Structure formats: structure tokens, C-alpha cells
Image (tube, rainbow, N blue to C red):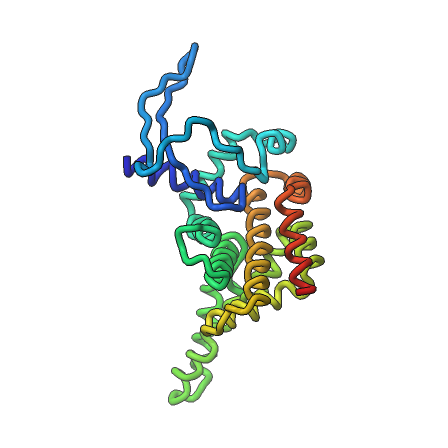
Length: 271
């Protein structure tokens, strides 16, 4: 059963978290074989024994990319699922896990922790999908070695420490580049909360240095920034899953939860 959970349940939960924007709990696993006449149930297991199986199906959650919207953009669900599992089993796994953790009820749900988790997810996605450095690492290492040799021997170690991180793109640039990939979603977020990128960087730095986040305005700000970053990641991962750019724009712009979250960002401006 542990193998089933690791191979199927955990990835599926993260996919549902990605598509719903909420922390989803999978309570039952069923193994089924597709028969010509009817599906054949081989095995069923409740994952949370302290919970009774509901007599009636629970209310369906809102899905950002429904089967219908995917079909309109030439993507069927089996194809999306196969693409997602390939992503999950690649270097994208860490980013997907951080995205899920940022909205998980199983971790500290302070807005500061929420913001740190989603910033981490953005940085991890950027490193894998775009480029975390200004120039290739090998080229930078060669340039650094040459520059170090031009420095007086007694200063070389100091110089190397000072410049060794110069090739790493700062968070502000990473957010800009992911926001550009997120196209209309990024534009909508920036319009709703002007200066979004700077507010993320300033807030992340404040939280990382242990500043208090208990006052109401900062709680709202941190939560709003996390909402915006999650929508950006949701957008770029739909692109990664094969949904066309125009289709992804339309799917998110039409989504009820996205419109609700944009209103929260707008309210943050006047708070």
C-alpha cells in the first residue's frame, strides 16, 4: 500500500492541489481493471481509518482546468495526466511539492510560512524551467577563475567569496521572468496589486529575517502575495502540461476563484 501511496496518491494530491488551489485530501484508493462490459474492482482501501466513508459523494470542487476546457484546447485528461506524471518524476517535483505545501493544512498556516513556501516554489520552478543564472555555470566558473588570478594572491579568497554569487539571478528577476511566462495572468496580478514584484521581495526578506507578521495589514498582504504567486505557477504549469498559451489565458481569466482572488489583491491596495 505504501508503494501505491508514493507512486499514485501523493502525485495525484499535488495535481489536485494545483488545479483547485486548495489542499485536497484523498481518503480512499480503489484498484480497478477496465473490463469490456464493466469495470472490475480488485481492491479498495481507506487511507484515513479514523474517517468514515461518506454515504454520499462530496460536493465537487471547482477545477481550474476542467475536462471540458482541456478538450476545447486539444488536451484530453489521459494526456494531461501522463504529462503531469512525467513532470512530477523530473526536477519539477520539488517545485510542485512546495506549491502544494504553501496551501497545505498539514503545515504551519501562518501567512509568513505560506509566503516563504510559494517563493521557494517560484525559485525552484525558475531554476528548472528558465535559468537560475545569468550565464551558464561552466562559463561563469571559467571567468571567475581567470578574474581570481588577476587579483593579488592575498586577496584572492576574499575576492572569490565576494563575487561567487554574482551569477545567481535575484528573486525580483525570477519573479519578473515567471510573470512574463504567465502572460495575462501576470498582467492581471500586477494591475490588481501595483508593485507586486517589489512587495513580494520586500515581504520575503522581512519574513526571512524574522520580522513580526501579526498585524492585520501584513497578514492580508502576505496572503495576497502568496495567492498571486500561486496563480502564476498554476499558469506556467498548465503550459508545461501542453495547454496552449491562449487557452491557458482563457481558462484562468474565466475561473471564478481567480476572479475572487484578484478582488482580494485589489482590496490589499486599499487596506
